[in-house]
Length: 123
Image (tube, rainbow, N blue to C red):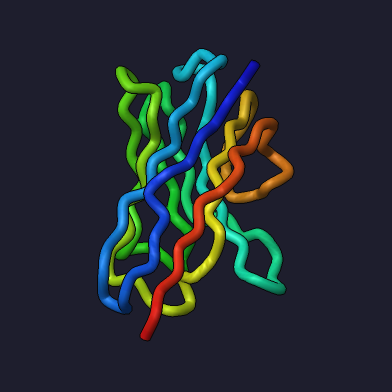
């Protein structure tokens, strides 16, 4: 059974930083791409960043480029999302997801999802 467990979400003030973690089990880590998505209240789920674990290819959404960085630890089977200079508009529930074929910022590309972790940024 594939499981993705997010952690690291918290309340933070604008300008602060957080690091989210996504621990994967039940899947061969090198065979999947992991994406981070977020969903703010009343809004659609948005792709934030993704990484292909086998070769490290990564992509970040324009809205977070230069502030967020995705990385993976293939020993710990964990993907991280380092978030710097957080702004109130970054407030959302953040989800990680695993894709067995393909990658990218479309939610429909992903097969497995975690339960999410809440990030709340106050001004």
